[in-house]
Length: 450
Image (cartoon, rainbow, N blue to C red):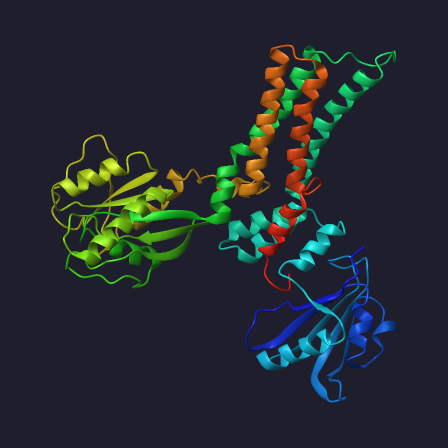
């Protein structure tokens, strides 16, 4: 049992209409009641709102508040919880929190409320991580993905797979420990192998949509590249529908990378407008060019912009070579001018950032290249968390080791070792099996008051 009572401001820091201070623990109601003037909170029923004032030690009223009383176990943390709704000024909110802390309540660490909800069995790790995904969702699909995780959809899928592995382990255990039982099934490779292959198939199915889930959750790092003055910054501005980047006829205007976000077709593009890539003696421009090359290396999608009104240059050819192994879209800008560019065996999307023609076609091309055309038809019960994906891959590796052991006719108890590893890896996803340092690291990334 966790004995400490904790408190923190649960709303964003700054001036606002109201602010909420959350208090949780076995003494939450009693501690807040000592600094509250109004109805006796210790006699107030659960899920009731009480009006009154927070008082300092001298008996002076600090703020007019509404207190929400939430009694265990019907709370987020499954502990007695108080939520103090006070006026949202920075000073008054901080003062109310200080008065509560003076009663012996401890200041909550980042993510400590969610950690308690996990420790007390209110949520599992996938649901805890979904809370932060919901807070940080950048588009509607990311929000749907987080809500699916929060409902326990991912948890249920993982637990069903874990039960299949555990069932197989249990059969082997019975076979090893009680071979004399008449109803004990002899666990040979003809029984184990098909079951392991079935579990592996289900795990691979989970991974099938994982890349799409990761894209929805985290967005796509997208680099807009090209030689100077081909229209990279104009394209960025056109996609954002605002004048974010400076545009001139002077080559080398963009000296550094410019980053922006845009929601498109239910996904977020993390756009990077890079400096034009060319040979240069200008020290500052050279730094920008080097950063552009690094942006290409780290990008998950490259939009290579060429000037249709000019023939292919050495810089263009170099960029075509540098990006050929990346997911890319080749854009031919300035289609409002006479065409001079010719490309062999490469798809060129023709457009004009000046007239905005071809912009809709580019958006469709981006969705198609990322393989997200069917995302509206998904039920969002898919993997998206890198940690979860990694553990699924570890589980598959463990099952591959089982299959290899079967092929070389290893003893059944040796086969069981890797099966137990698979069970353990799946448990690490939901938190049923967890090293303490993993839990501390995960919840340390949460915001204060959550």
